Structure formats: C-alpha cells, structure tokens
Amino acid sequence: MKNSIKKITVALTLVGLSSLTFATTTVLTVNGMVCAFCAQGIEKRLSKLPEIKGVFVDLKKKIVAVEAKDGMTLDKTLLQSEIKDAGYDVTKVEDTDRTIAAVKADAKGKK
Ligand SMILES: [Cu+2]
Image (cartoon, rainbow, N blue to C red; front, top):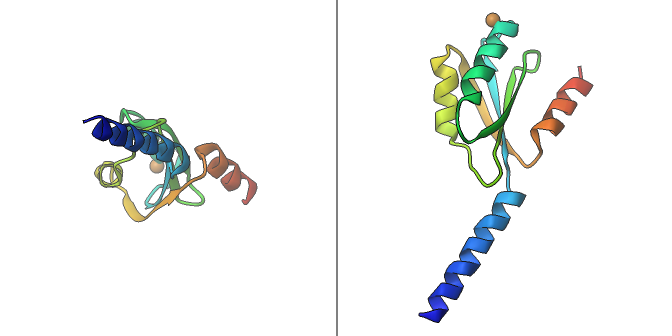
C-alpha cells in the first residue's frame, strides 16, 4: 500500500515537471487572414478558451501562436476547429518549447 502511494507521488511529480519542460506553445499556420480584423477575431475567439494564456497572430507570416497556462495542455483539435469555424484554413500545426514572447520577438525581428 505504501509503495503504491510512493509510485503515485513520483508519477505526479513527473507530470508536474514535464509540464514545465515540454512544449507549451502551439504555432498554427493559417490561411485566409488578410487584415487586422481577422487577427483580432481569431485572437478574441481563442482567448475565451480557459486553458489559453496568450494568443499572438502574425498576418505576414500567417501564423497564430497560442500559449497554454502553466500546467495545462492545449487541445490541438479544438484550436483547429475554432479557427476553421471562424472561417479560416489551418494548414500546419506545430508545437514549440518556446514561449509566445519568443515567437513574437522572432516574427517581429524577421520582417
Ligand atoms: Cu480581415
């Protein structure tokens, strides 16, 4: 009995650690966003999801970067369907271990 409690504690610790080290940002390539209103609409829509900490949209690069709240994971199927429901096409979904701020800085730096 004691042993199984130990095992559960170890498992929970590992889950806790992995949420810190694994990818927390998902970068989606989205077609069809043409103006600031498109970007704003997607941002608004995705910001409503409880697991989302931040959204960054770059029209030129056609990307939507979404960062999860600490310890939470993003449902990629949900992200895709939210964007599709808004009227856009998702062509690529990629996880990154970078923060949304890093993705943002990168997009701003390479214009
Ligand atoms: Cu637009």
